[in-house]
View 1 (spheres, rainbow, N blue to C red):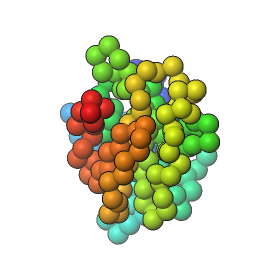
View 2 (view 1 turned 60 degrees about the vertical axis):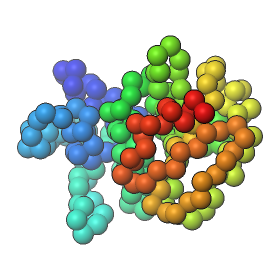
View 3 (view 1 turned 180 degrees about the horizontal axis):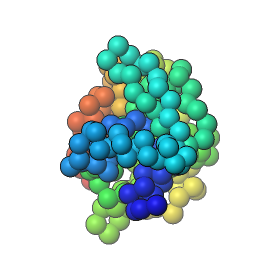
Length: 195
């Protein structure tokens, strides 16, 4: 098994489910779709990955790649958007750590990433918000909970990806970035932590 296969398999260990397009954005930027498809098919043929075809939308009907547990179609759109967000962060920053669905005291964000920023490490909590329930309340007084959980000095940034109109929120101990599904604000997220 070569280094690229190991990287892809490690990535799928973290995100659990992904599409060929997501893998291509990370590991086959300068290769054709056909080459990436063949590569992923080889991983499936060699029993390193599984895949299942999902009819998600009129335009989007991809194979979903996974290792163990088959994706639940009811939450697959949400899970794939978490993976999209992680891919965008990986393509934009040097990432030290990625944890999908960590439990921090009584709070469970969709993901936590730790970004290398010069000599420090910036934690970013990811929330993918596709329903109208309140995703902010659980983050009140979060800094104390996070400090107990982490040795990182920087306070976390809450990055919310949504297709809803959400009002800007201010939390005393968190910087919040609300972004659309195109994730146009990712590259500027570290400016937020310097406020």
